[in-house]
Image 1 (cartoon, rainbow, N blue to C red):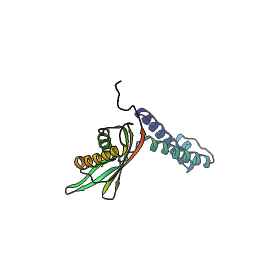
Image 2 (image 1 turned 135 degrees about the vertical axis):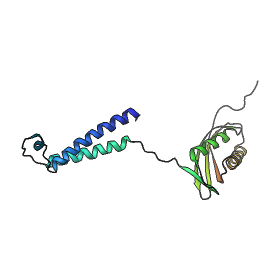
Image 3 (image 1 turned 135 degrees about the horizontal axis):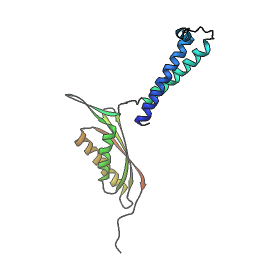
Image 4 (image 1 turned 180 degrees about the vertical axis):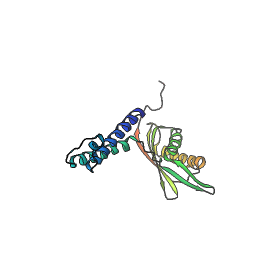
Length: 175
């Protein structure tokens, strides 16, 4: 929902809240006809129920129109001067950058989460066909752990590597 749609929904919902409030007031005994100089005889329950339903629906629209600002999940590291928070997305970007520098790695997806006193990383990689998977995996694990330790000051508990697929052409051959 873009900003204009949110504004429009909010204005419409506020209008419905006002109408619903008036209907609830009529249902509770307020007689708008007395204000206008006329006397009315009516059953208040339909006004009360309709007003309450409109207030509930309009309130729901207002709440849905206001964007929620949830903090991004982050890894917290305590230092002598206080906390340092690194978003999981930022750490994942560091891991992706490092993983793509490993020869034979074509593409990666990364998950990061906090576990005890360190972090755990899962790297799902697409690799080229002409590379040794055990050597590539070991190199990838070592580079990710070292880079996160040196760059972000993080203790890496584990780096799990999943070879998702073998992709792309092998090394080019000249015939």
